[in-house]
Structure formats: C-alpha cells, structure tokens
Image 1 (cartoon, rainbow, N blue to C red):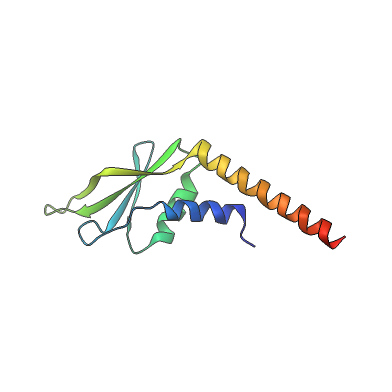
Image 2: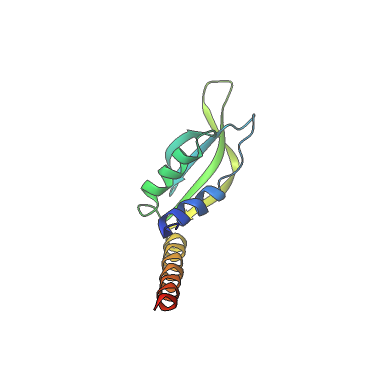
Length: 111
C-alpha cells in the first residue's frame, strides 16, 4: 500500500515540467532562493530536494534551466509551482484520512 508521504512525493513528481534538449535542467527555488539545479534525467533527486525543503518554505517553484553560452546557468521565464506549504499539508492530510477510512472499512469486513 502506498503511504501518504509517497503519494505526496508522486504529486510533486507529476508536476515537474518536462525538460527538453534546450532546457535540460530544473532550477528549484524556495521562496525565491535557489535550492538546487538538478539534471532533468534525475527526477528522484529533484523530488528529494522538494521533500527536504517543503516545510521550510511557503512555496517551492521549478523552472527549466540551461547552461548558456557564457557558461552561466539560466532559467526559463515560466515557472511551475511544485509545493505550496498549506496545499501540500492539506494533500498529505487528505491522503492520511483516505487511508484511515480504507483501513476502517477493511477491518469491518474482516470482523
């Protein structure tokens, strides 16, 4: 059975923007501070950055990024909100509630 924390991580993973040949990295920010730049081939590492920081920041956003001609990392203008602290807490609480209700139903069928 998938835990509520695993469901939350999957929710974040599902919201990462698709990387391309032109934009092969993710630039991850918490409240406008760069937390990490992650290779687009490593979604699990990117999700771990979100997992490690989602309660520290009000919001975590992700941009696609690339290494520019001047060897400077540049981010795309478009952003994707991956985690809003209150939304993530609510999602986690809702998953926990669903799991509790499922367990109660399973227990009552066994009795």
